[in-house]
Image 1 (tube, one colour):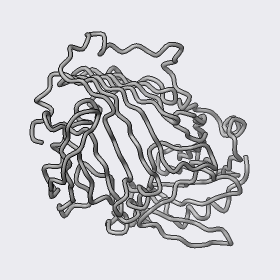
Image 2 (image 1 turned 30 degrees about the vertical axis):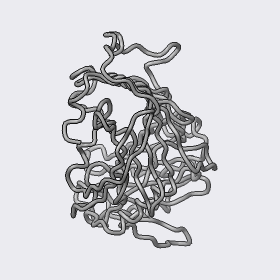
Image 3 (image 1 turned 135 degrees about the horizontal axis):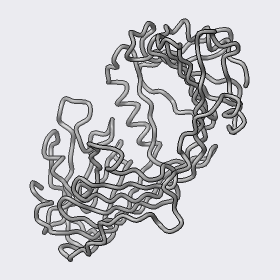
Image 4 (image 1 turned 60 degrees about the vertical axis):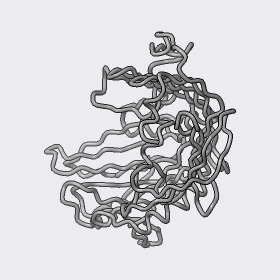
Length: 358
């Protein structure tokens, strides 16, 4: 397992990713139950992938096309809810998706993109896990060794497995040592599987493999590009009722940010209202989206009711300018998350009661 990626000069492969959201959320809840949260904060479980509003999928499946050499790779992901291209060549990189458009090293420095030979590297399991040979297998037509792994480290999450998952199985190429199949197990069931369907080693890769070009007909700007506008204009764009402070405190100014819905991945539209004091002393953020896309908080949340409305609170009751106090609730068809690093929770409750439809 040690040094496996150093035994190849290049890899061309097709992989399939399968994830079962229900099992992954179950594992995450177990993780949250045994995690201490800073000053009463909590976690949000956001599953990779998604489905149209009101629908659920038992399993999410993606296809990955990979061309990789040490230090550079090209990775194309596709599936019913995802499409992306990632090209990394040393310190240079480009990443594109229909929803988020084009990002690259020209605009963002110091970013390390995960992928390439890392997808096949077993060395991350050499520390913090007990390993046990479990027989033989054949993957993508190649002989493989099965290795059962079990978490042994005291930390909550060693590298390699999803939060809350403690065991899995690797199937390693018997000749090269690379991971041809990895499964993460929850109560013996496969919650996440990445499997090689086809693989070729050490064939020369043309230089143009690592040259990025936008796909035909694609735009460098994604649909999820934020639009800074007024509250009324954002309310006209949104697919759900938008709520605002009326009247807003006299010393505050307001701004709205609208983000359109996307299909790859499936994300709802959202509106974020930013209220700031002109002297910069206090700030309030109110993020709103549809209730159909509510993301449950797991761990550290406090639940209570005020004037007949259920609330969920995260973070400190009296923030000190860093970790925010957060209040999560629903107003008719709208899910609202109100937060501030300066205002106390009691003040957030007063402001929540003063919201009116825009």
